[in-house]
Length: 98
Image (cartoon, rainbow, N blue to C red; front, side, top):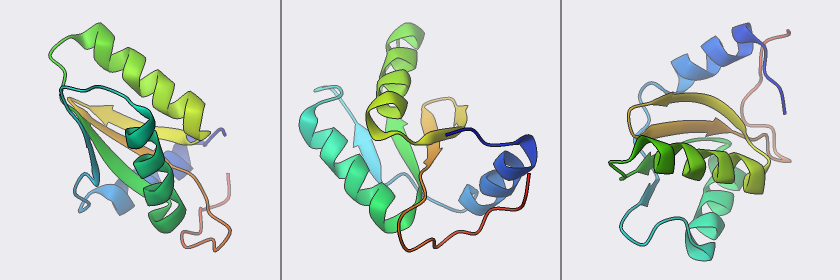
């Protein structure tokens, strides 16, 4: 899923007040974590994921895996917080036109 810059800016504004709903800790990116991310995306469409990893490369690999496995679009990555968006069947968030 590709988002235009205008759509990303809109989603960043919508996500500003959100707290991370999924936190990836010492156990890393597991099937259980993936299931929680999928559930959160289906319910909220726009979520933040906190990745507790000191290694920048590991963090990048986890982010790429989340995007690949969920089919979501990356809105932004700031520090250890990844913001992702995936529209659900209910269409709770209406994106601006490209």
